[in-house]
Length: 313
Image (cartoon, rainbow, N blue to C red; front, side, top):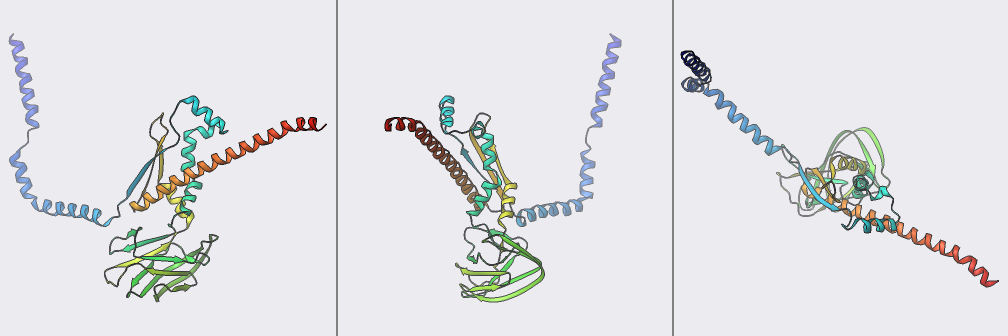
């Protein structure tokens, strides 16, 4: 018994020693905090300032998403018979193949061709530039048969309700003719500034446009710029930010999403993408149906021909 009591006392002493090692000396901690108060006074406001600057001056990235029902839900037999009636192959019935078509460069390029994304509009700030899509206050009407400078900011300053100033600076540039998408590069330096009237033709060796004023007024605090984009570059950009996934393993619903700095532009792209995809599928089904009808008519003619010859004889 005495031996057990001694063991119990030794264990208690060990537990007390271990717990004492982890006890905080709050008095010493408070003294240390007061000694280095200046460090906290510097680092805490600095950290808060950095967080505020990141949120205030960095361009946010928005995500737009939507869902597409690829086919009508029904019994497997009816669906199979309907698809076979249209002559669709097993690969075309595969949902993964439909997703591949939806996210293909061909469908994305067709979508880009139907949108007005070739020109981007921006409000220029001191530390952050914001893309404007729905109502930039002015519109550029380019001559699609003339060369337009690519990927170079063209700054616009409103002088009054009738006049504006364009400023362009670039060391080397390339141009595009949108009619045939021919491009040409140049090593020339551009340092251009000129005054023009709204609604009149602006013509240079690398620019041919008409600028329309849709409500801008002269203001020293407001600065704008626009730039021309290559359709193939836009296609590559949206291919990289477009995502499409099945909602579930046995579901025929596909969730698609796209990310970018302008939420309305993302939504516009997704709506047009789904419309382009649906129209492409309808066109393919109509073509298959037309080919099937033509084939049946040809077979009927072949079958009827011997009987017609017999009757004539």
